[in-house]
Image 1 (tube, helix red, strand yellow):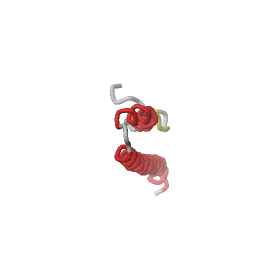
Image 2 (cartoon, rainbow, N blue to C red):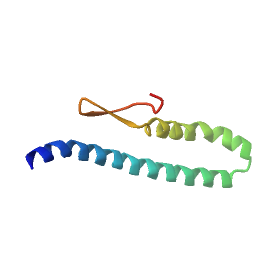
Image 3 (cartoon, rainbow, N blue to C red):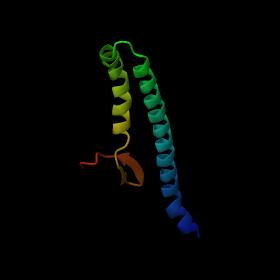
Image 4 (cartoon, rainbow, N blue to C red):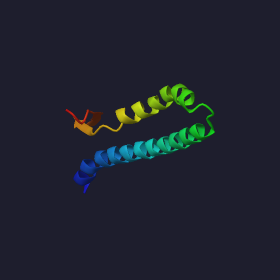
Length: 85
């Protein structure tokens, strides 16, 4: 029993950490989408509004893309690697 606990405990912690990050990522994505939709609907000059807001929302997209890479395990620790690697 001790060996099983020692074997699975680190994997369960990693799984929970990944799940927690995904929950937060989904919440941020949902709020950003709602806010973008609201701002675009209220815009008088759609082109100018998009031009002004795009850099801020692109940062959210870039962050999300950077943190949704597949996990890679090295030396029992979790690190991130691009899906291309």
